[in-house]
Amino acid sequence: MRRVIPVLLLTVAGLIPLWRFEATPHESTAVLAEPAPAETSPAVPGTSGAAPPAGGSGQPASTSTTGSSESTNYGSVQVQVTFTGDRITEVRALRAPTRTRTQGALPRLRQSALTAQSADIDTVSGATQTSQAYAKSLQAAIDAKGR
Image 1 (cartoon, helix red, strand yellow):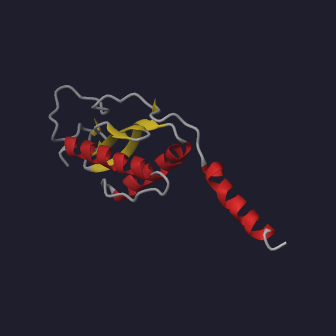
Image 2 (image 1 turned 30 degrees about the horizontal axis):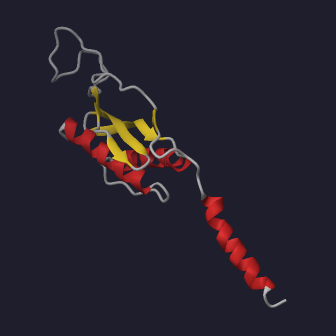
């Protein structure tokens, strides 16, 4: 009877890695979206870029920039950032690994980037490499804007 409890505990401890195993290909990346055009604001002929047209909304033009494609052990990560003036108004993942943890982390990373208005975002637990690659691609897109 003394041996039963240690044997059961060691059996459970040995099965835990099997329960956590994820059978996915080493490098699987999904193309989530195609890049949007760089300029999303319509141009008005005969006006300069400094002043909005009469009767216009007075909103600055929206521009989109694409960050670099960053590789991880699980696939590539690439984001596209939309700016309205100097504010980040949208962040889209163009490429991302197809792992379940990564797909769960993408909405958190997007919200963090929109809240922080920079690439200084927190790493999502369980998707560390993806989070770091997301931040690098985000920073490359911000740098491309010249912000």
